[in-house]
Length: 356
Image (cartoon, rainbow, N blue to C red; front, side, top):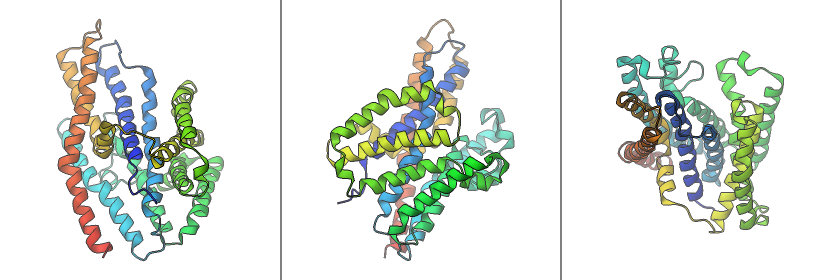
């Protein structure tokens, strides 16, 4: 029997979000600490939380649409669910960021704020930098959704060969072309990050196949432990995350694909205990992702006003604890009072319009 909601992957979303927060908290500390640093440089691996999001996204897309391929309304039903999941909450933080930018331009994306395109930012179009800097990943997500929506029009048996052909096109294009020379739309369409989404989708197909039971829970535990003990240190040592090409997508996508497979296998066998805190963070992961840079920036500026102590790490410890606490608390509140009501309303309309 298929699992309708993978709690292990929801918790993994929480881990991915906290990893991205840690990566940006590292930058905030370096900017406002006055010279001394508490957070380890190892936290640069937190930027790979976005890669993990892409892999999870591919897995979830296949999981939630199993048995729904070829239906006349499924394409629109899927797009409605995905677009209303992304845009309303995102627009709130876009307007908030725009308001701050109009009042104090230097406080918002000082490296690219002047170049940000309002139309691109509003619709998440490729091309100009976005006013909400972290929203670049949403442009990739939208591309994944559009292609997957087209695949829903066909028989489910076509999904696996379609994913393999899609991956082959992306690999061939990156091996033979310089993406930077192409139009912005083609850069997104052929970007190596697409491979991470495809990896997640392939893992979802495999875990529901007849071959998956050959991999025991013990093997999954071993794989997850190996990823944590060896995979992440190797990513750091060889600076794999410094690029955005095929090597990063292939290595990091495979690493996270194995991790997703291991956790999903353990959940199927009911051999995993999921911390409630990570589930809560997973639920609020989208709100946390969109809001955390604003929250961290506020804490950083308060830190600067209070006066950092270059000869003591106590202020670093206090500021870092405050940063993570503020991000988590605001994330839950933002999810509870903004994102969740929007999702309920969206689901009610989808049920009325597409599930009748």
